[in-house]
Image (cartoon, rainbow, N blue to C red; front, side, top):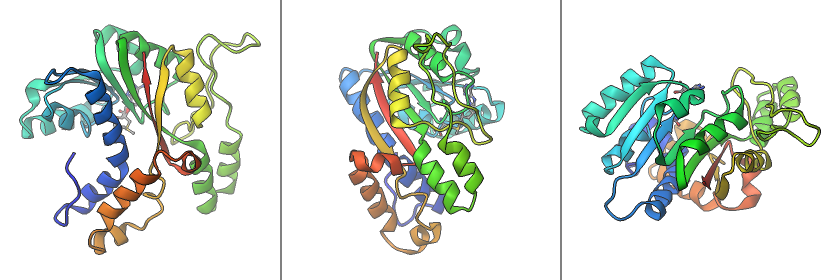
Amino acid sequence: MAQPTARSSASERRQSVRTGVVWDGVRRLLEADVADGQPARIVDIGGGTGGFAVPLAELGHAVQVIDPSPDALASLDRRARERGVADRVTGQQGDLSDLSDLVDEVDLVLCHGVLEMVEDPAASLASIAGVLRPGGHLSLLVAQRHAAVVARAMAGHFQAARELLDDVPHRPAGGSADGQAGQAGPVGRSGRRFTHDEVVDLLAGAGLSPESVHAVRVFADLVPGSLLDLEPGATAALVELEKAVATRPEYLPLAAQLHVTARR
Ligand SMILES: C[S@@+](CC[C@H](N)C(=O)[O-])C[C@H]1O[C@@H](n2cnc3c(N)ncnc32)[C@H](O)[C@@H]1O
């Protein structure tokens, strides 16, 4: 993904702040995982309009995007053609629960901003593990609960903050010690939120070993957009700040999202 410049649009600048840390993580996975010059087989589940899929195809990888939204897939198709990578990006209408029917064995699965919306996060992660080759990786991006509680409270939505605080924990597939089946907390209008420990438990339940956790959007949502639009160099400096705090555990609870990589 391109670095922000003075000529980037306002939306490109904000996007670079939101995705800089995640891109670095995905790039590291590919460097570690794929032999030099070999294209990786990648699935982007809920990949939407191709914000990650198209740049990954530009790096030479073969990317299959699965998404239930026909509109998102149409935008993906347009974007892939415009960037000259339509031969390396395939869009397919489908759902995380159909994954095993739609995908052969792959090197890397991206699941960014999707686990919040599915019926059963534990079963979804088990499906993802089922299509990864042994040693393959998952790049998982999920909304983080503690920051969302603070954001709601600061916006004056105290009841919503209180409800989110007591959200039901997400049990790994296979059930809990008391024999209950894997369950997840209620899905609100904007989806579920997860804590770091819940994500780690869910991954372990699916047979995936977490390798790295990064804090994403620690400051990005708190900084006024006008500051990035008006202050020269502010976007690049904020991207660097986000990267600097991403690996510090004390900033994890403040992050709007967690980026977790895990190995099968
Ligand atoms: C918040 S967007 C994230 C898009 C993209 N992954 C990104 O990071 O920019 C969530 C995407 O998940 C898709 N989605 C929603 N429910 C899904 C499901 N059950 N299985 C797969 N994708 C789903 C939506 O259509 C949407 O494109």
